[in-house]
Image (cartoon, rainbow, N blue to C red):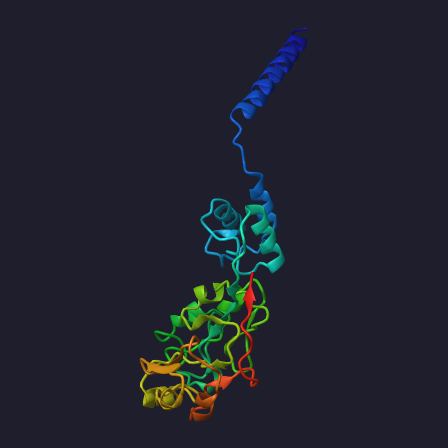
Length: 275
């Protein structure tokens, strides 16, 4: 009989406590904006961090609060971005598409301090070897794939020369590859460019030439011959101003190192904008 009373009391107490908790959940309920779930559902869910926030949930919250634009996600499609704009009741402002670019073409064309690097297949780890890595060039891509591991879009790989290379069609410019690169040779550039200069070596000409067979030597032939003043030599390495570049190709012809290339060879392509 005592056991029956105990069970009955516990049942009653459980019901009372359940009712109290149910009422409390309604009284203290934090109202959430239903638009948050809709915005989050319109994001890709890659959590790449390219928007500058801690994953897609952080990006969605920032958009809802007006702290980020509706096209904050660089990897989102135009259709989904338009959907977010409709949810927020605003107009999408087009932006120029950008992609990551590796400022190095050395790899097996660069000198090495020793025959073979033996260690972790990681660029940061390799940087601890011989001070700044196994290459003679202190500015070159190490080609060990830290950027490849960081990319969630399969947009960067190590090419046949042992250098990281970006697949421009897959790249969404989240720049996670740049974030993990210890050499800081990965930069953002407009998608629609023709002329590229893959070198970041700031050494003087003689040293740069000795350390890599394809490095920029700061000779200024490109600078002197560019009719639009779009290419200049700064800190011993040529830099292209894409706001001025007309893709005339004169710098390509004049470069004695054959470093500057036209990746399309068809003239200036039409600017590409994404929502």
